[in-house]
Length: 509
Image (tube, rainbow, N blue to C red):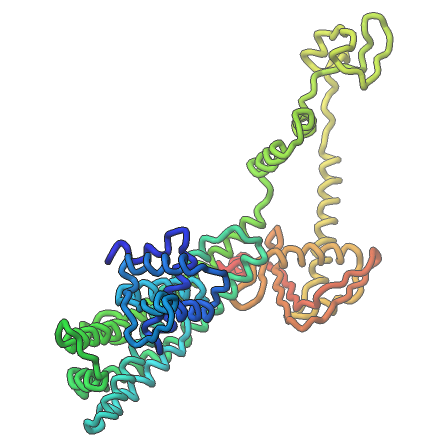
């Protein structure tokens, strides 16, 4: 490839260069050669509204001609009445093959950047329909009209396959960026991931169905003789003659290459796995990876505070401190490392000292050695004998047993026979209300499963909570002596886990 092919997009006048090349590309359909006035009119049609002097426009055209993107020629069909008209209409410019390739590449790049990423399983149905139509046309007797339709139908198959490959490539890149994207907030992150999972699941279901039809359609075309189909398509293409030789062999070689690509996607000739099967594997793997990313994100969100997180938060506070004095106050509040003041001791003169007096100006105080070693000035005598704790232990055990029994009774009263609406609890006692809030908090903190249900166990593993949002917008109202609770009317299931087997089953073991 010529290193100067895209040079016109790298100069200070790149915007004007691209506008001029785009004007020639659009005008080439009906007017392959343009003089200076025609170039101005074509620039206006592509949206260029900045004034450009004739000298500047001619320099741009000369530069593009020098790079081999345009070719200049004399317009022998024009009539000139004045020297000014001769200057303006004598020369005309047209795109060279190199210029056509350059502006096509730029426009394709712009289109690729603007293209919304998407996977369409309907493309597979379109390829299958086109292959069936191609087989029907190839089975008809030879005629110029039928051969032309064979050429158009084969080109349609190739375009649909190219669209499928481009969509898969772009979506895989989008998917990798999505897996690495951790900069969004939790709600946006979770919403995008869940919608992508649903998107992939629908695509997998849409791809699996037409795959067998495509294999049969490819076999149907090949049964008629692939070389014969290509020869008839070549006749229908009606290729224009070129000076370098017959373009037919190269055209046929390209058709064969693209057909082998089609077979590689759906029915490889060597019996290997079809690429569309790999696409399904990629989609299924992506679903698993997205769910894992979601789980890790929610796990990190639910993780309890740690010393490392505390120190990181403190470091951010230090970095945001306006000055050294504020940083010193923050340090004192965080660590409490103030010097020992012993404000309760009197100085040598016996005068009381205010607790707000700075140690830098306060009088010195004699500190007894006992205070330095034991932290107390009290004179220690014989240690009192340790009382028998049996009676106190029995009282505490009985109190704990009663509290545990009361707690179990409260939990038993909250259990449901299957799933019920949260509003079914109505009015409950304060202790039962507190226990219900704890169980709801545990359930809402659990991740949503693939069936749309949250499942969780209480901290001691004795109660299983299952929550599901019916998405009907109903509001539950629960009354207690302490107030009224209002919230979404969830479907709630609360059950006791009374054995090890039930515990293992509840946690998925």
